Length: 167
Image 1: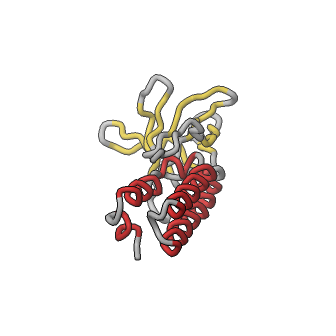
Image 2: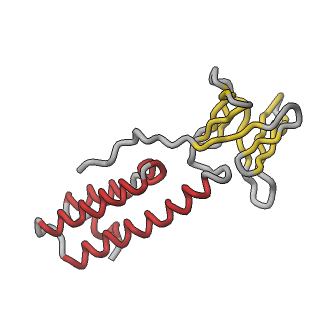
């Protein structure tokens, strides 16, 4: 039995699987999202829409994903991770933002570079100037070491206003 098999049985299960797949909630409000999915599976059992076996399967899948995102979110607070957003600080002021795709933008939305996460190479921020790559900085944890100037700090930007997927 897989989630794919279950989502075609009933509309309520399809909605549960859609909520389960909502990664923005897992990245930002993982505890609340897990609790919501667990409670929704309990409701489906209470209303006899699913069996006890299916309820246990759903809750186990949600718990496994919850544990995975707890680990990922903890890693994202220590070093740059793809699919997370960061504020880039120069001293105490915000100098730019790194979006979910690894693009570094200034506050006036000018592209300053992209994070190159080539396996086996230190993550770097690269900007293309006249079709030639120029290294703007290298990443070390949540610091961007620049060839010129003081290093920039990154802070994880959690969007606590993410809405739970309501069924």
